[in-house]
Image (cartoon, rainbow over all chains, first blue to last red; front, side, top):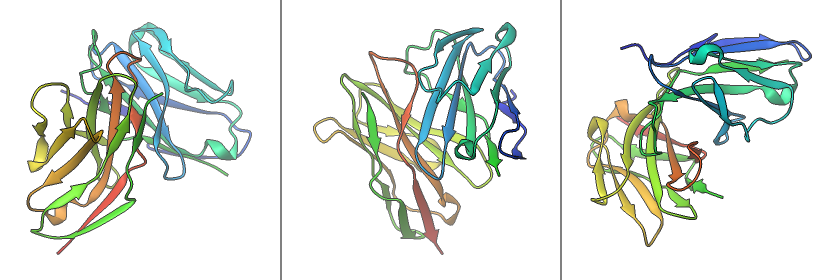
Length: 116
Length: 114
């Protein structure tokens, strides 16, 4: 069974440019999460999809970040325009539907974003 | 609000010695607790979790963790460390009654010295 995959693995962009990160969850997983680790600090929650619907986007830092999950399959996270403080590692995770919180999430390898 | 503290940024241990990576948590209700590991250039891998029942939980690669409700701790342990255990370890918590996202600690870099 394929795991969670993320593209690209690394991205270096200039301040003001746009970047789109992609996440393919484990097939059949209804829950999809985005997290971010900045400057070696803790991993912080960004948002949660259940199928194609945004269940919780309380962790999104500002309106420069836009996440979508068309058709309830893969998800994209767009940063437009990128700022220096957006640099970090962006993780995607998925878990099975009906998750009552006791199910572990499976993580991708992350996308390392560097804004220069 | 829930939070996790990993008081040690770095833990060094000799190969063959027991290891402990510390984690304390704060939640308003009862917790679900998780440990994840990140090897270099890899994603986060699930190690083990505490949901309910026995306070000592066993996970992958010989790791175990003990849930201590009175001390609000969930320390990760292994009786005999291997050089290959060297990695970044994250503790995470979910409040049973709240949203589904995980709250992570800042991570502990474990180095096992040969």
